[in-house]
Amino acid sequence: MEERRNREAGDELALARRAATGDQRAFAQIVTLYERRLLVYLTQMLNDAETARDMAQETFIAAFQALPRWQPPDPLPVHPLSPWLYRIATNRALSHLRAQQHDAGDVAVRWRQDQAQAHEGTLEDRTAARDLLETALRQLSEEDAACLVLHYVAGERYHEIGSRLGISSDAVRKRVGRALTALRAAYHALDVEAKV
Image 1: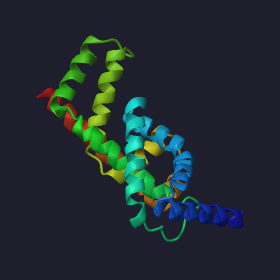
Image 2 (image 1 turned 45 degrees about the vertical axis):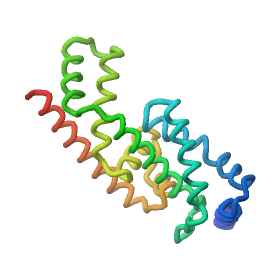
Image 3 (image 1 turned 180 degrees about the vertical axis):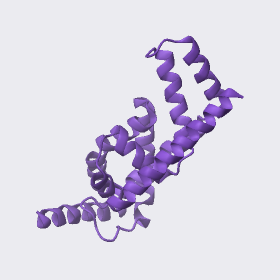
Image 4 (image 1 turned 180 degrees about the horizontal axis):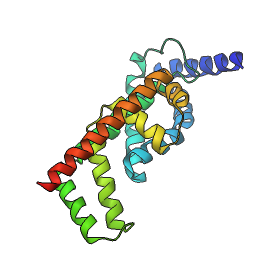
């Protein structure tokens, strides 16, 4: 098992090194390896498949341009490019969300109005709740938001997230806990703004 993991890591590292020299076939293999996973992750984070495709494309373009400067993590995980690619994708997604940001007070007020006017489970109610969540998520660090989304939306376990992002399971657990605390505080702040 350990030998297979080392071989997989070595294969991906060799692929990354070839792609870093401009080998487009090697980079196409990297895209094939990560595209579906990044699309699922970005779709869950952005709640929009079309925007997720755009952000995935931007992620791969940025990765291709930066690959000559990329340094493999130490110790080498099974998928050495994974932490780096997910960091790029997370930064792109959060930058997009910030650019699309509505005024937090307006979102909270609209959410309150929708709650008062709409029946539970209506499309408007779900949309307002999603807007409120996106506003709260934008207040988290990229790493904390990524861990929170991967754990609660993608359903990944701490060790899976740690492997994907190149951090320990304990670090993931702390990030998820910190993100939940910050998310609750953001919701509370938005709720208070809506009552003013």
